[in-house]
Length: 313
Image (tube, rainbow, N blue to C red; front, side):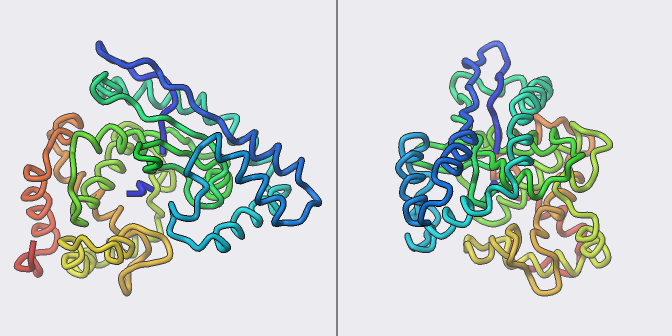
């Protein structure tokens, strides 16, 4: 999700658009290595994989990037190779569909944001690969540059077979578009706005999209909505924090505030963006600086949960 979290391989439009970046498809590399190393010791398979991928996407399959011990990260690679036969057919099919779906999503996105991909803010390199379970999509910093990554393994595992992927791609496209325009903003309320806006943009560009296609599980939304003021009051202290531990409670799976679903910050952020979006264009919202956004965001939170409007902001 700062995770933010993936996307852009197609054409970027506009009168000053940069050359369209090609999607760099590494799914075939994973498949080839899995087949060629089948039956070999796990350590040998891992070594061959790392050697091959080090030249294809330097720094991505690196334990240091994710803060994991080398032995632990190597076990992720070994497990992914071992389990690949069970997902290969679905992995291959979803990977094959991504490029065309992404191109269609970008063409639609560019009609609303015609300055996307402008020469002063060109699209990042875009990779399609096996993410070892890390992500379905998002941006990553590798070797001092931002890249957009789509994990065909997680898309195949998590996304419904009948899902319209356009909202998902446009969610990630918005992050790529918005991040350089919004600038540096480290507090967790910034992420509430960034993720809420990405979800809201996907919803506005795709009327009728299902909750799961917007990355908003219906059951979780219902639980938050059942006592929205209490949920917001619980979140308020975390929103002014810059702590990654607090960020994870709001936006990551596997961690949450007590009594709230995982990733509850996405839904509350979406509600804030929805409120602020009434009567405004998407480009207008996307152009706000952190200073312009902050007062408006907390005003909406005060409106939705007046009992805790006196809390720090």
